[in-house]
Image 1 (cartoon, protein in one colour):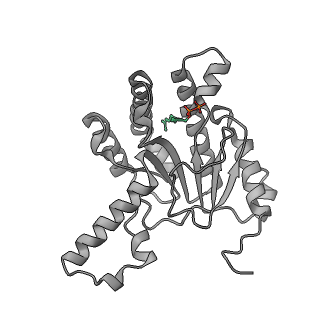
Image 2 (cartoon, rainbow, N blue to C red):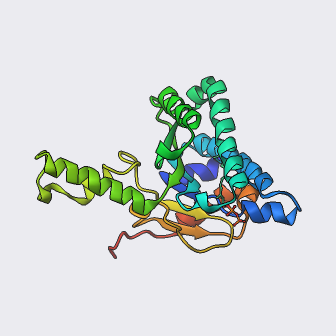
Length: 243
Ligand code: FPP
């Protein structure tokens, strides 16, 4: 993005991405679906780098939903291997991440992932936890409803333990039990791939988000597409229910 234009804009603090269209991208090229995910992982890397370059505070990527386990085992394995590759690479690039101030966080239910993958996620989170220029949330085995159920259970436990009163449950206290606790809610959610739905992504946090649905397939999503999305976001007048 042109530096002069950038200076004029009030950037979204948090952007969510639903990375859709990998399968169709591969199909169009007569490639296996896993090749589409590989290209999707490249798009993820470049958009992460670009978002941190722009100074966006938080970006969340929907990488694997609680429903995605229904896919053929071969495809699930291929996606899990891409996570492994990315986390191993992030470890090797830790100096670079340090410099860029990127903190990587896992959001979702880790417990059913392969133990080595859980350990990789934990190590990567720990290694980058003190960074605060850009938080990169990777949503894996994530579902928005499951996240709210988890928050409700955690609050119920606090009530049962006498730590809080039922009246102490507020929108704020629910937000604080979500995976994204302490982060701004997403200002903008981008879904490439031609579908116009939210698919259980950040459903609590997106109450006032702007949505942008585009036809571009995720592997074809480049820096210029993020520029266009940000400019479109800046043109919209957000009223948060006011007038
Ligand atoms: C949806 O497209 C995409 C997924 C279910 C997987 C997304 C995963 C990646 C982009 C790889 C992530 C890797 C890292 C390192 C974060 P689809 O397969 O449903 O596409 P289709 O609708 O065209 O079939």
